[in-house]
Length: 480
Image: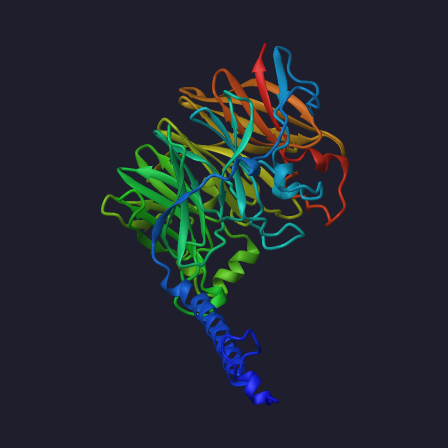
Protein backbone atom coordinates (compact mmCIF):
# COMPACT_ATOMS: atom_id res chain seq x y z
CA UNK A 1 0.00 0.00 0.00
CA UNK A 2 1.40 3.31 -1.02
CA UNK A 3 1.39 6.26 1.32
CA UNK A 4 -0.14 9.61 0.56
CA UNK A 5 3.33 10.92 0.21
CA UNK A 6 4.12 8.32 -2.44
CA UNK A 7 0.96 9.07 -4.38
CA UNK A 8 1.48 12.85 -4.33
CA UNK A 9 5.02 12.40 -5.46
CA UNK A 10 4.25 10.41 -8.58
CA UNK A 11 5.27 11.99 -11.90
CA UNK A 12 3.42 11.66 -15.16
CA UNK A 13 0.60 9.69 -13.55
CA UNK A 14 -2.05 12.36 -13.87
CA UNK A 15 -2.36 12.44 -10.12
CA UNK A 16 -2.29 15.48 -7.84
CA UNK A 17 0.72 17.84 -7.79
CA UNK A 18 2.95 18.11 -4.74
CA UNK A 19 1.59 20.48 -2.10
CA UNK A 20 4.87 22.40 -2.17
CA UNK A 21 4.56 23.04 -5.89
CA UNK A 22 0.93 24.15 -5.52
CA UNK A 23 1.86 26.62 -2.81
CA UNK A 24 4.81 27.90 -4.84
CA UNK A 25 2.56 28.31 -7.88
CA UNK A 26 -0.06 30.21 -5.92
CA UNK A 27 2.54 32.46 -4.39
CA UNK A 28 4.08 33.03 -7.82
CA UNK A 29 0.71 33.90 -9.34
CA UNK A 30 -0.10 36.20 -6.43
CA UNK A 31 3.29 37.83 -6.76
CA UNK A 32 2.78 38.33 -10.48
CA UNK A 33 -0.65 39.84 -9.81
CA UNK A 34 0.77 42.21 -7.20
CA UNK A 35 3.55 43.15 -9.59
CA UNK A 36 1.09 43.88 -12.40
CA UNK A 37 -1.14 45.96 -10.12
CA UNK A 38 1.86 47.88 -8.81
CA UNK A 39 3.11 48.46 -12.35
CA UNK A 40 -0.32 49.71 -13.40
CA UNK A 41 -0.47 52.12 -10.45
CA UNK A 42 3.04 53.39 -11.11
CA UNK A 43 2.27 53.83 -14.81
CA UNK A 44 -0.93 55.71 -13.94
CA UNK A 45 1.06 58.09 -11.73
CA UNK A 46 4.04 58.51 -14.04
CA UNK A 47 2.26 58.67 -17.40
CA UNK A 48 0.91 62.22 -16.87
CA UNK A 49 4.47 63.29 -16.05
CA UNK A 50 6.33 61.39 -18.78
CA UNK A 51 3.80 61.16 -21.64
CA UNK A 52 5.61 62.16 -24.86
CA UNK A 53 4.29 64.65 -27.39
CA UNK A 54 2.98 62.79 -30.41
CA UNK A 55 0.60 62.74 -33.36
CA UNK A 56 -1.86 59.87 -33.61
CA UNK A 57 -4.16 58.73 -36.43
CA UNK A 58 -7.81 58.45 -35.36
CA UNK A 59 -9.05 55.23 -36.91
CA UNK A 60 -12.65 55.19 -38.18
CA UNK A 61 -15.03 52.75 -36.47
CA UNK A 62 -16.07 49.41 -37.93
CA UNK A 63 -19.07 49.41 -40.30
CA UNK A 64 -21.40 47.91 -37.67
CA UNK A 65 -20.54 50.81 -35.33
CA UNK A 66 -21.87 53.40 -37.75
CA UNK A 67 -25.04 55.30 -36.81
CA UNK A 68 -28.28 54.40 -38.53
CA UNK A 69 -30.08 57.72 -39.08
CA UNK A 70 -32.77 58.02 -41.71
CA UNK A 71 -32.87 61.40 -43.48
CA UNK A 72 -35.97 62.71 -45.16
CA UNK A 73 -38.62 65.39 -45.07
CA UNK A 74 -40.80 63.56 -42.52
CA UNK A 75 -40.89 65.27 -39.13
CA UNK A 76 -39.28 68.59 -40.12
CA UNK A 77 -39.59 70.55 -36.84
CA UNK A 78 -39.89 73.96 -38.58
CA UNK A 79 -42.89 76.12 -39.29
CA UNK A 80 -43.47 79.54 -40.83
CA UNK A 81 -40.40 79.23 -43.04
CA UNK A 82 -39.82 82.22 -45.32
CA UNK A 83 -41.57 81.87 -48.66
CA UNK A 84 -39.31 80.61 -51.43
CA UNK A 85 -37.40 78.23 -49.15
CA UNK A 86 -37.87 74.56 -48.32
CA UNK A 87 -36.66 72.60 -45.29
CA UNK A 88 -35.51 68.98 -45.19
CA UNK A 89 -34.75 67.18 -41.94
CA UNK A 90 -31.43 65.32 -41.90
CA UNK A 91 -32.51 63.51 -38.75
CA UNK A 92 -31.21 63.67 -35.20
CA UNK A 93 -27.72 62.14 -35.30
CA UNK A 94 -27.03 63.26 -31.72
CA UNK A 95 -29.76 60.94 -30.43
CA UNK A 96 -27.68 58.00 -31.69
CA UNK A 97 -24.97 58.91 -29.14
CA UNK A 98 -27.10 60.51 -26.39
CA UNK A 99 -30.19 58.31 -26.43
CA UNK A 100 -32.17 59.86 -23.56
CA UNK A 101 -34.27 62.91 -24.38
CA UNK A 102 -33.18 64.60 -21.13
CA UNK A 103 -29.63 64.71 -22.57
CA UNK A 104 -30.64 67.73 -24.62
CA UNK A 105 -27.53 69.72 -23.64
CA UNK A 106 -24.86 67.32 -25.01
CA UNK A 107 -27.13 66.70 -28.01
CA UNK A 108 -26.85 70.37 -28.97
CA UNK A 109 -25.12 70.95 -32.34
CA UNK A 110 -22.62 73.52 -31.03
CA UNK A 111 -20.95 73.75 -34.43
CA UNK A 112 -21.49 72.77 -38.05
CA UNK A 113 -18.95 72.87 -40.87
CA UNK A 114 -19.25 72.12 -44.57
CA UNK A 115 -15.94 70.66 -45.78
CA UNK A 116 -14.86 68.32 -48.57
CA UNK A 117 -18.38 67.15 -49.37
CA UNK A 118 -19.22 66.46 -45.73
CA UNK A 119 -21.30 68.32 -43.14
CA UNK A 120 -19.52 67.98 -39.78
CA UNK A 121 -21.35 68.11 -36.46
CA UNK A 122 -20.00 69.09 -33.02
CA UNK A 123 -21.67 67.65 -29.89
CA UNK A 124 -20.93 67.05 -26.20
CA UNK A 125 -20.84 68.90 -22.88
CA UNK A 126 -17.61 70.12 -21.26
CA UNK A 127 -19.28 71.48 -18.12
CA UNK A 128 -18.27 69.97 -14.79
CA UNK A 129 -21.79 70.32 -13.41
CA UNK A 130 -25.20 68.86 -14.16
CA UNK A 131 -26.54 65.40 -14.99
CA UNK A 132 -24.71 65.33 -18.34
CA UNK A 133 -21.41 66.83 -17.16
CA UNK A 134 -18.31 65.83 -19.15
CA UNK A 135 -20.11 63.90 -21.87
CA UNK A 136 -17.12 62.56 -23.77
CA UNK A 137 -15.61 60.83 -25.56
CA UNK A 138 -17.43 62.53 -28.42
CA UNK A 139 -18.15 60.95 -31.80
CA UNK A 140 -17.17 63.06 -34.79
CA UNK A 141 -20.22 62.69 -37.02
CA UNK A 142 -20.54 63.81 -40.63
CA UNK A 143 -23.27 63.82 -43.24
CA UNK A 144 -22.28 62.92 -46.79
CA UNK A 145 -23.83 65.28 -49.32
CA UNK A 146 -23.33 62.62 -52.00
CA UNK A 147 -24.92 59.62 -50.27
CA UNK A 148 -27.26 61.38 -47.85
CA UNK A 149 -26.04 59.28 -44.91
CA UNK A 150 -24.55 60.05 -41.51
CA UNK A 151 -21.34 58.35 -40.47
CA UNK A 152 -18.92 58.43 -37.56
CA UNK A 153 -15.47 59.42 -38.80
CA UNK A 154 -13.66 59.18 -35.47
CA UNK A 155 -14.09 59.14 -31.71
CA UNK A 156 -12.44 62.16 -30.08
CA UNK A 157 -11.07 61.92 -26.51
CA UNK A 158 -12.79 65.23 -25.67
CA UNK A 159 -15.80 66.19 -23.60
CA UNK A 160 -17.15 68.47 -26.33
CA UNK A 161 -16.61 69.57 -29.93
CA UNK A 162 -17.42 73.28 -29.95
CA UNK A 163 -15.66 74.63 -33.08
CA UNK A 164 -14.54 73.71 -36.59
CA UNK A 165 -12.00 75.99 -38.28
CA UNK A 166 -11.18 75.65 -41.97
CA UNK A 167 -7.76 76.68 -43.28
CA UNK A 168 -7.09 76.12 -46.96
CA UNK A 169 -7.46 72.41 -47.66
CA UNK A 170 -7.56 71.50 -43.96
CA UNK A 171 -10.26 71.38 -41.31
CA UNK A 172 -9.17 71.79 -37.68
CA UNK A 173 -10.85 71.14 -34.33
CA UNK A 174 -9.49 72.78 -31.15
CA UNK A 175 -9.43 70.39 -28.20
CA UNK A 176 -12.09 71.96 -25.97
CA UNK A 177 -11.60 69.66 -22.97
CA UNK A 178 -9.29 66.62 -23.29
CA UNK A 179 -10.03 63.43 -21.38
CA UNK A 180 -6.36 62.49 -21.06
CA UNK A 181 -3.66 63.93 -18.83
CA UNK A 182 -2.98 67.65 -18.64
CA UNK A 183 0.58 67.27 -19.90
CA UNK A 184 -0.52 67.99 -23.49
CA UNK A 185 -3.45 69.69 -25.16
CA UNK A 186 -5.06 68.49 -28.36
CA UNK A 187 -5.65 69.72 -31.87
CA UNK A 188 -7.33 67.64 -34.57
CA UNK A 189 -7.00 68.06 -38.31
CA UNK A 190 -7.99 66.49 -41.59
CA UNK A 191 -6.83 67.31 -45.10
CA UNK A 192 -9.29 67.45 -48.01
CA UNK A 193 -9.30 64.23 -49.97
CA UNK A 194 -7.89 62.26 -47.05
CA UNK A 195 -9.88 59.68 -45.15
CA UNK A 196 -7.94 60.12 -41.91
CA UNK A 197 -8.24 62.46 -38.96
CA UNK A 198 -5.10 63.14 -36.90
CA UNK A 199 -4.81 64.00 -33.23
CA UNK A 200 -1.90 66.35 -32.56
CA UNK A 201 -1.22 65.94 -28.86
CA UNK A 202 1.61 68.45 -28.59
CA UNK A 203 0.30 71.63 -26.90
CA UNK A 204 2.26 71.98 -23.65
CA UNK A 205 -0.10 71.89 -20.65
CA UNK A 206 -3.17 73.20 -22.47
CA UNK A 207 -6.31 71.84 -20.82
CA UNK A 208 -8.70 73.93 -22.96
CA UNK A 209 -8.20 75.33 -26.46
CA UNK A 210 -10.89 77.91 -27.15
CA UNK A 211 -9.73 79.32 -30.48
CA UNK A 212 -7.25 78.72 -33.27
CA UNK A 213 -5.97 81.00 -36.06
CA UNK A 214 -3.12 81.52 -38.53
CA UNK A 215 -1.14 84.73 -38.71
CA UNK A 216 2.01 85.48 -40.72
CA UNK A 217 2.88 81.81 -41.08
CA UNK A 218 2.23 81.06 -37.41
CA UNK A 219 -0.35 78.70 -35.99
CA UNK A 220 -1.83 80.37 -32.90
CA UNK A 221 -4.11 79.04 -30.15
CA UNK A 222 -5.86 80.65 -27.17
CA UNK A 223 -6.95 78.81 -24.05
CA UNK A 224 -5.75 78.05 -20.56
CA UNK A 225 -3.18 75.97 -18.70
CA UNK A 226 -3.07 74.58 -15.13
CA UNK A 227 0.17 76.39 -14.23
CA UNK A 228 -0.44 79.97 -15.37
CA UNK A 229 0.48 81.27 -11.89
CA UNK A 230 3.51 80.40 -9.76
CA UNK A 231 1.95 81.15 -6.37
CA UNK A 232 -1.15 80.18 -4.46
CA UNK A 233 -2.92 76.82 -3.98
CA UNK A 234 -2.24 74.46 -6.87
CA UNK A 235 -5.95 74.16 -7.73
CA UNK A 236 -6.09 77.93 -8.29
CA UNK A 237 -2.99 78.34 -10.45
CA UNK A 238 -4.85 77.66 -13.68
CA UNK A 239 -5.32 80.57 -16.04
CA UNK A 240 -5.16 81.98 -19.53
CA UNK A 241 -2.40 81.29 -22.03
CA UNK A 242 -1.50 81.77 -25.71
CA UNK A 243 0.74 79.62 -27.87
CA UNK A 244 2.33 80.01 -31.31
CA UNK A 245 3.96 77.50 -33.63
CA UNK A 246 5.94 77.99 -36.83
CA UNK A 247 6.10 74.23 -37.41
CA UNK A 248 2.40 73.49 -38.01
CA UNK A 249 1.88 72.50 -34.41
CA UNK A 250 4.93 70.28 -33.90
CA UNK A 251 6.62 72.64 -31.42
CA UNK A 252 5.14 75.53 -29.47
CA UNK A 253 6.08 78.72 -27.69
CA UNK A 254 3.71 79.39 -24.78
CA UNK A 255 3.01 82.70 -23.07
CA UNK A 256 1.08 82.64 -19.78
CA UNK A 257 -1.21 85.55 -18.99
CA UNK A 258 -2.88 86.95 -15.87
CA UNK A 259 -6.50 86.11 -16.64
CA UNK A 260 -8.81 83.14 -16.24
CA UNK A 261 -9.27 82.10 -19.90
CA UNK A 262 -8.08 83.36 -23.28
CA UNK A 263 -11.24 82.93 -25.32
CA UNK A 264 -10.79 84.30 -28.84
CA UNK A 265 -8.30 85.42 -31.50
CA UNK A 266 -9.21 88.48 -33.57
CA UNK A 267 -7.40 89.09 -36.89
CA UNK A 268 -8.11 92.75 -37.73
CA UNK A 269 -6.47 94.87 -40.42
CA UNK A 270 -3.36 92.69 -40.68
CA UNK A 271 -2.90 92.50 -36.90
CA UNK A 272 -3.75 89.66 -34.50
CA UNK A 273 -5.31 90.26 -31.10
CA UNK A 274 -6.12 87.84 -28.29
CA UNK A 275 -9.06 88.39 -25.95
CA UNK A 276 -9.43 87.31 -22.35
CA UNK A 277 -12.67 86.40 -20.59
CA UNK A 278 -13.84 89.78 -19.34
CA UNK A 279 -14.36 89.53 -15.57
CA UNK A 280 -17.52 90.45 -13.75
CA UNK A 281 -17.57 90.99 -9.95
CA UNK A 282 -17.10 87.30 -9.10
CA UNK A 283 -14.18 86.72 -11.44
CA UNK A 284 -12.60 90.02 -10.41
CA UNK A 285 -12.60 88.82 -6.79
CA UNK A 286 -10.95 85.56 -7.87
CA UNK A 287 -8.27 87.37 -9.87
CA UNK A 288 -7.66 89.84 -7.05
CA UNK A 289 -7.42 87.07 -4.47
CA UNK A 290 -4.70 85.44 -6.54
CA UNK A 291 -2.86 88.72 -7.17
CA UNK A 292 -3.63 88.83 -10.89
CA UNK A 293 -6.17 91.61 -11.25
CA UNK A 294 -3.53 94.35 -11.14
CA UNK A 295 -1.70 92.90 -14.14
CA UNK A 296 -4.81 91.88 -16.05
CA UNK A 297 -5.41 93.16 -19.59
CA UNK A 298 -8.49 92.38 -21.67
CA UNK A 299 -6.62 92.57 -25.00
CA UNK A 300 -3.17 91.36 -26.11
CA UNK A 301 -1.51 91.97 -29.47
CA UNK A 302 0.90 89.65 -31.26
CA UNK A 303 4.18 91.18 -32.41
CA UNK A 304 6.38 89.98 -35.25
CA UNK A 305 9.07 88.81 -32.83
CA UNK A 306 6.64 86.27 -31.42
CA UNK A 307 5.80 88.09 -28.17
CA UNK A 308 2.42 89.30 -26.99
CA UNK A 309 1.99 92.77 -25.50
CA UNK A 310 -0.87 93.87 -23.27
CA UNK A 311 -3.08 96.52 -24.88
CA UNK A 312 -4.40 98.32 -21.82
CA UNK A 313 -5.33 101.26 -24.04
CA UNK A 314 -8.24 99.12 -25.28
CA UNK A 315 -10.69 99.00 -22.35
CA UNK A 316 -13.32 96.32 -21.96
CA UNK A 317 -16.14 98.64 -22.94
CA UNK A 318 -14.48 99.14 -26.34
CA UNK A 319 -15.11 95.48 -27.14
CA UNK A 320 -18.76 95.75 -26.06
CA UNK A 321 -20.03 99.05 -27.47
CA UNK A 322 -23.61 100.06 -26.64
CA UNK A 323 -23.81 97.34 -23.95
CA UNK A 324 -25.08 98.61 -20.58
CA UNK A 325 -22.60 97.94 -17.77
CA UNK A 326 -19.89 96.76 -20.17
CA UNK A 327 -17.13 97.50 -17.62
CA UNK A 328 -18.89 95.59 -14.82
CA UNK A 329 -20.38 92.51 -16.40
CA UNK A 330 -18.79 89.18 -17.26
CA UNK A 331 -18.33 88.52 -20.99
CA UNK A 332 -17.12 85.46 -22.86
CA UNK A 333 -16.14 86.43 -26.41
CA UNK A 334 -16.28 83.52 -28.85
CA UNK A 335 -16.88 82.43 -32.45
CA UNK A 336 -14.54 85.07 -33.84
CA UNK A 337 -15.05 84.89 -37.61
CA UNK A 338 -12.77 86.94 -39.90
CA UNK A 339 -13.96 88.22 -43.27
CA UNK A 340 -11.62 90.34 -45.34
CA UNK A 341 -9.80 92.81 -43.06
CA UNK A 342 -12.54 92.77 -40.41
CA UNK A 343 -13.69 90.25 -37.84
CA UNK A 344 -17.04 89.57 -36.18
CA UNK A 345 -17.63 87.79 -32.89
CA UNK A 346 -20.34 86.80 -30.43
CA UNK A 347 -20.16 87.64 -26.73
CA UNK A 348 -22.10 85.84 -24.01
CA UNK A 349 -22.83 88.53 -21.43
CA UNK A 350 -23.52 87.83 -17.78
CA UNK A 351 -26.27 89.60 -15.90
CA UNK A 352 -25.79 93.16 -14.69
CA UNK A 353 -28.23 94.86 -12.31
CA UNK A 354 -30.74 92.07 -12.93
CA UNK A 355 -30.41 92.39 -16.67
CA UNK A 356 -30.81 88.80 -18.01
CA UNK A 357 -27.84 87.13 -19.73
CA UNK A 358 -27.51 87.94 -23.41
CA UNK A 359 -25.65 86.94 -26.56
CA UNK A 360 -24.64 89.91 -28.71
CA UNK A 361 -22.74 90.20 -32.00
CA UNK A 362 -20.02 92.74 -32.84
CA UNK A 363 -17.85 93.71 -35.80
CA UNK A 364 -14.33 95.19 -35.53
CA UNK A 365 -12.71 97.04 -38.44
CA UNK A 366 -9.87 98.81 -36.57
CA UNK A 367 -8.05 98.15 -33.30
CA UNK A 368 -5.08 100.44 -33.81
CA UNK A 369 -4.02 103.03 -31.21
CA UNK A 370 -6.23 106.06 -31.66
CA UNK A 371 -8.19 104.36 -34.46
CA UNK A 372 -10.52 101.85 -32.83
CA UNK A 373 -13.74 100.95 -34.60
CA UNK A 374 -15.97 98.29 -33.08
CA UNK A 375 -19.71 98.22 -33.73
CA UNK A 376 -22.53 96.25 -32.17
CA UNK A 377 -24.93 94.55 -34.57
CA UNK A 378 -28.42 95.68 -33.53
CA UNK A 379 -30.84 92.91 -32.55
CA UNK A 380 -34.45 92.93 -31.46
CA UNK A 381 -35.29 92.88 -27.76
CA UNK A 382 -34.78 89.34 -26.51
CA UNK A 383 -33.03 88.23 -29.70
CA UNK A 384 -29.79 86.27 -29.16
CA UNK A 385 -26.84 86.05 -31.56
CA UNK A 386 -26.07 82.36 -32.04
CA UNK A 387 -23.55 81.81 -34.85
CA UNK A 388 -21.58 83.53 -37.61
CA UNK A 389 -20.66 82.25 -41.07
CA UNK A 390 -18.14 84.12 -43.23
CA UNK A 391 -19.66 85.18 -46.54
CA UNK A 392 -17.06 86.86 -48.76
CA UNK A 393 -16.29 90.21 -47.12
CA UNK A 394 -19.27 89.88 -44.78
CA UNK A 395 -21.14 87.35 -42.67
CA UNK A 396 -24.32 85.39 -42.27
CA UNK A 397 -25.61 85.99 -38.73
CA UNK A 398 -27.81 83.34 -37.12
CA UNK A 399 -30.01 84.61 -34.29
CA UNK A 400 -32.87 83.20 -32.19
CA UNK A 401 -35.59 84.66 -29.99
CA UNK A 402 -37.93 82.89 -27.59
CA UNK A 403 -41.59 83.46 -28.44
CA UNK A 404 -43.33 81.36 -25.78
CA UNK A 405 -42.87 78.11 -23.91
CA UNK A 406 -43.16 76.05 -27.10
CA UNK A 407 -41.48 78.00 -29.90
CA UNK A 408 -38.39 79.95 -30.86
CA UNK A 409 -38.07 82.25 -33.86
CA UNK A 410 -34.73 81.99 -35.67
CA UNK A 411 -33.47 84.01 -38.60
CA UNK A 412 -30.46 84.35 -40.86
CA UNK A 413 -29.30 87.86 -41.76
CA UNK A 414 -26.68 88.89 -44.30
CA UNK A 415 -24.25 91.43 -42.81
CA UNK A 416 -21.94 93.56 -44.96
CA UNK A 417 -19.54 96.44 -44.32
CA UNK A 418 -20.21 99.42 -46.57
CA UNK A 419 -18.68 102.91 -46.62
CA UNK A 420 -21.80 104.30 -44.99
CA UNK A 421 -21.76 101.66 -42.24
CA UNK A 422 -22.96 98.14 -41.43
CA UNK A 423 -25.67 96.91 -43.79
CA UNK A 424 -28.09 94.12 -42.80
CA UNK A 425 -30.29 92.20 -45.21
CA UNK A 426 -32.81 89.53 -44.11
CA UNK A 427 -32.31 86.15 -45.76
CA UNK A 428 -34.82 83.81 -44.13
CA UNK A 429 -36.62 83.04 -40.87
CA UNK A 430 -38.50 80.13 -39.29
CA UNK A 431 -39.94 78.88 -36.03
CA UNK A 432 -39.03 75.70 -34.15
CA UNK A 433 -39.42 74.15 -30.67
CA UNK A 434 -35.77 75.03 -29.90
CA UNK A 435 -33.35 77.75 -31.02
CA UNK A 436 -30.99 77.27 -33.93
CA UNK A 437 -27.46 77.06 -32.51
CA UNK A 438 -25.20 76.58 -35.51
CA UNK A 439 -25.01 77.52 -39.18
CA UNK A 440 -23.07 76.16 -42.15
CA UNK A 441 -23.43 76.19 -45.90
CA UNK A 442 -22.69 77.94 -49.15
CA UNK A 443 -24.58 79.91 -51.79
CA UNK A 444 -26.55 76.83 -52.81
CA UNK A 445 -27.77 75.51 -49.45
CA UNK A 446 -27.57 76.15 -45.72
CA UNK A 447 -27.76 73.93 -42.66
CA UNK A 448 -28.86 74.70 -39.10
CA UNK A 449 -28.68 72.66 -35.89
CA UNK A 450 -31.38 72.92 -33.20
CA UNK A 451 -30.29 72.65 -29.59
CA UNK A 452 -30.77 73.39 -25.90
CA UNK A 453 -31.81 77.00 -25.10
CA UNK A 454 -28.97 79.33 -24.00
CA UNK A 455 -28.75 80.21 -20.30
CA UNK A 456 -31.36 77.59 -19.40
CA UNK A 457 -30.68 74.76 -16.95
CA UNK A 458 -30.61 71.30 -18.48
CA UNK A 459 -33.36 68.81 -17.61
CA UNK A 460 -33.11 66.57 -14.58
CA UNK A 461 -31.95 63.03 -15.21
CA UNK A 462 -34.81 60.95 -16.55
CA UNK A 463 -37.16 63.92 -17.10
CA UNK A 464 -37.74 65.96 -20.23
CA UNK A 465 -40.33 67.85 -22.21
CA UNK A 466 -41.35 67.47 -25.84
CA UNK A 467 -38.92 70.14 -27.06
CA UNK A 468 -35.94 68.27 -25.56
CA UNK A 469 -36.49 65.46 -28.04
CA UNK A 470 -35.80 67.88 -30.90
CA UNK A 471 -32.34 68.84 -29.60
CA UNK A 472 -29.70 67.57 -32.02
CA UNK A 473 -31.86 67.83 -35.14
CA UNK A 474 -30.10 69.11 -38.26
CA UNK A 475 -32.12 70.79 -41.02
CA UNK A 476 -31.15 71.61 -44.61
CA UNK A 477 -32.54 74.85 -46.09
CA UNK A 478 -32.73 75.33 -49.86
CA UNK A 479 -34.22 77.89 -52.20
CA UNK A 480 -37.09 76.64 -54.30
